[in-house]
Length: 165
Image (cartoon, rainbow, N blue to C red):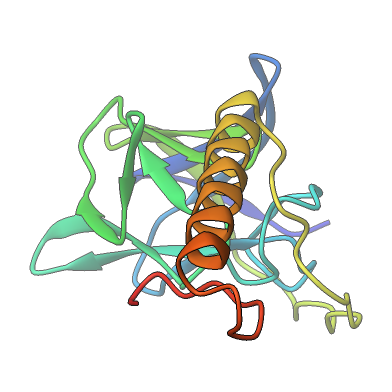
């Protein structure tokens, strides 16, 4: 077992159903978050990209950055590409919440060992939420009405839909 030393430093707490799944200190190197097990904070959820986001320090500020994930990264319910984090902020990735604690005492292992190699995981699954389903239904309805308008204006043209015509 690795020796632990209590060092006062910021930490991230991965939460699911209001229970702490994992706590990770934020130090000199970026903390990676994603579905792949080679991340510092692996999130076992198909709505999470393999390498979804990272948290790091820049000019003395803790920053979270989305890594072009499919379903996005949210800080306090706002979708972000990059944002400065403050004590008590919540990062939402998939159905998981990561609580930001800038004052916590996080145990830091002296010998953290090597990360395991990530297995190949095919694709990121689209998060199926009520809001997303409604948005897709509206888009489909708009597509159908555009298609009918297009066919009635030019019945002899090939059937296709283009928003720019």
